[in-house]
Image (cartoon, rainbow, N blue to C red; front, side, top):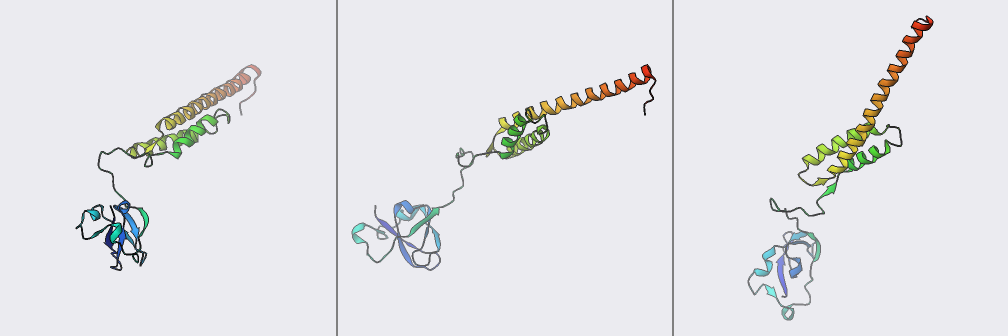
Amino acid sequence: MGTAVFGCSTCGKQFRVVPEQAGRKVRCPHCEAPNSVPDNVFAAAPSEVLTPESQEPLDELSAVVEPAPQAPAPGAPRLPADIRTSGKAIAALILGILAFFSLGITGIPALILGVVALHEIDRSSGLINGKGMAIWGIALGGIWVTFLTVLGWCMLVVIFEDAWRSQILYGYPLG
């Protein structure tokens, strides 16, 4: 198939487009304005479609700018380029793992980021993934927060028990 004559929506001058440019945005060779070439431009009257033999050498072909944006149909599968992994879920997992080496200091941020990431993933309608990483970040952070809480309470009990025994056995006043 040859080329078709297409009119610029800004300057009104006509230029040629090739079949590969149907459904895409092209720049007018005269005024450089972007134009959307309809998909049916080659289904026009045969007099408007030019074969290689009937083309005049003075007319320029337009340059392709970018594909025209097309919204996916409802229920259509998402393209892999549309789906991304949550950065918060990745950070939650990393901080949860680092909690083992930092004696639990990064456990609380892992817990918080994991919960925020889960909320973000649930609201994204499938455009953001990383739910497993967020859950593992929450689990690892939660293990360390729980461990440190229990350890802290145990230390308080030992300290107060020691102080209480000191008062009873040795007669030292508490205070």
